[in-house]
Image (tube, rainbow, N blue to C red; front, side):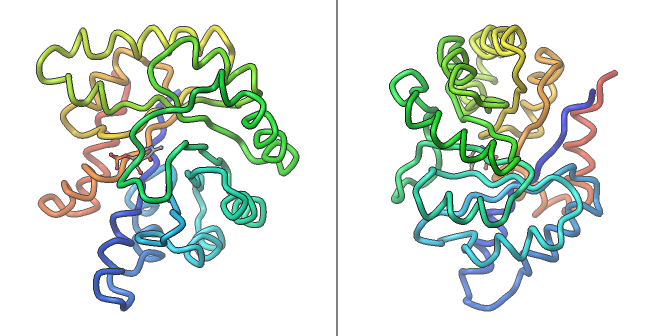
Length: 240
Ligand code: PXP
């Protein structure tokens, strides 16, 4: 099975919000990402609505034909939103409202009871769940124990160390991915994946179900255009 590419469109919303109008049109960009070959769309609504706004979320759900993934911290407000919209997948991220971007995974052992409750609510609504974790077989084990359908590996440390020594950089991720496979749950990955480091990641860990990519992809699109960029990322994911 090919690894799916979910395009995170938060940065498109950031650009829109900079001028207060509707340019670029987030809904049109999401549709165009699908047209250009994306397998899904990801958004990460935050409480301050500095990029994706709450109102964008049902509007996207109404028009998307591919997988819709909503990431975020499971506050009451976030859970009310996702249970109403019912996307294909919800990715639980332990970030604080003021955080610039996600910068660590869950402690799935400490937060076991809380995560169990949230995962039960998602399961009852038939929403696939994914838990954002650091590269740690132990964190994967407790995510599975809590009932997660998938984990998403937080790949920033891999991306940071890729240029220096990619074999060493991927090692903890490979060990965690092997454990995830043994546990029988799905595997996603995301954060700072790029045209430079994506291919090696999915060539070594061939069973990644989905990557979600935003920042680097939108930056690449400034030079290559959105269509060429999505095709270039998809090219990295082709198993030869
Ligand atoms: N996965 C999660 C949980 C995230 O919070 C983010 C950033 O919003 C991403 C993936 C995508 O990261 P990037 O924008 O660096 O591609």
